[in-house]
Amino acid sequence: MTLSLGPRRDAVGLKDGALLVDGKWRPASDGATWTHRHPATGEAIGTVPVANESDVDEAVRAARHAFDEGDWPRARAHIRVGVLLRYASLLREHAEELRGLQALDNGVPLMFSTNIYAGSVEIAADVFTHHAGWVDKVGGQTLPPYQGGDHLAMTFRDPIGVVAAILPWNAPFLLFAQKLGPALAAGCTVVLKPSEFASFAVLRMVELLSEAGLPDGVVNVVTGPGSPTGEALITHPLVDKISFTGSRAVGRHIVEASAGTLKRVSLELGGKSPTLVFPDAPDVGMAAMTTVGTVTMGLSGQACVAHTRALVHRDVYDQFLGAAETMAGAVTYGDPFELSTTASPLINTRQLDRVLGLIERGRAAGARLVCGGERAGGDLAEGNFVRPTIFADVDNDMEIAREEVFGPVLAVIPFTDENEAVRIANDTDYGLGAGLYTADAKRAFRLARRLRAGTVGINGFQVEPHLPFGGFKQSGLGREGGQSAFEAYTELKTVLMPLTDEMM
Ligand code: NAD
Image 1 (tube, rainbow, N blue to C red):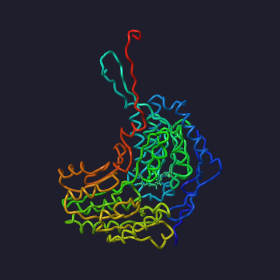
Image 2 (image 1 turned 90 degrees about the horizontal axis):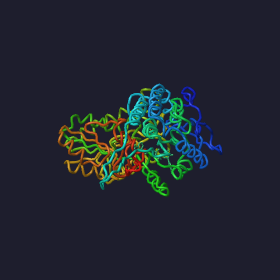
Image 3 (image 1 turned 45 degrees about the horizontal axis):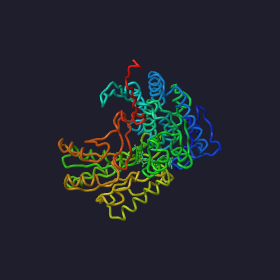
Image 4 (image 1 turned 120 degrees about the vertical axis):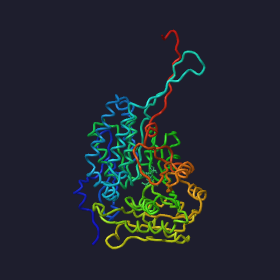
């Protein structure tokens, strides 16, 4: 029997996609469409328009008009707070529907989007609630005159303007919220581009914005792939800021392509995050299960935060590998709507080929394959499934330890002392996350400071809506979550007023 999800389309209520320009949904001006194929089965699930340069131009002009002439950027605090809080409630009410749409989009199983907070609609709702709180709380400063005299000088935070928000396909609930939450709270207007591999849940999330009372034109949507849609957006002269989550290659390209108009750019890119496991870890088995869990369960390693390099002290190396293999064996693939399915397929055949190629080259380079390393067969043969894969005895110079695989592949690297572990951990182009497992509090804090990563988890790791999240080095620019994320959608303005007799 071959897995088939086609009938779910009607059961879940999926409609074909459309562009949103100034409150009106419509097809692409030239009628072009993108057909979305389900990653678990290869079936065509639905279509979205491919916005061309002129569609993108209209969407950006609508956002520009809403910013320059509309009420939203200047709305009283209670209006913006009200919309954001109503929206958070609507997301919670529609959680089941959104989870189903996402399962049709990117194959992320309901087990994950229901039970794991970071993958849930609830975290997206919480992000909007969190950012609603900044609307009336982020102010400026009043500054004393530097050169004496009677001067009044103060700073304000103005909304940054028109934001191009570009999403990847892997975690649309959270990433949609991490961009639109602070952007709307700050008073910006937005042109949103979902990934061509995960548009449907995002389009429904956008529909709910107008139910929450967001005025037309404040959020506009262009669907379609990087070229032509994304390209037209990142080079548009009327866009003030680009907020991008995706691959390092596209992130670099965005910096270059947007340089002509010096746009503000926030980038959340990839990772090759290390986990350091010491012999005094409170529970080595739990450390192994958590690490393997981030690399295999749910998104099957297609998560920027996955801890894909396990640096394990030689004294507990075999114990770690045993527990890691057991955890990898617990992964179940299948119909994403079945709660027994614990992990998703790879998003497309290009990614499938890439992951299999990296595994093959890892083997050829001399890494020891502990488990996995091949596609799943039987009912799953039509889908993009790769068995959870663990490589032991990896050298940190191997490609498998340096490249972001974005698949269910863990590289395990032995170490003998703390300094060696830190050196290996920091020997990477990336710096998104890191984990460490030890019962020694002094070592934990010492290493948390030495590891060059945006987020360090000590004896565990989680994503929270109010914590800054982002990368050192080539993992990105800026942070999402928390006050710094809100401020990233503002410009700091200084207002000066020398006090003269004539004015008093
Ligand atoms: P991707 O870079 O291929 O695509 C991301 C988005 O950019 C998509 O919407 C795509 O259509 C668009 N795009 C592609 N080319 C473009 C162009 N030339 N101009 C404008 N837009 C363009 O990434 P992906 O495969 O969707 O996602 C996987 C990557 O995302 C991984 O590297 C992962 O680590 C990263 N990621 C990072 C975070 C984080 O918070 N740091 C979170 C999730 C995913």
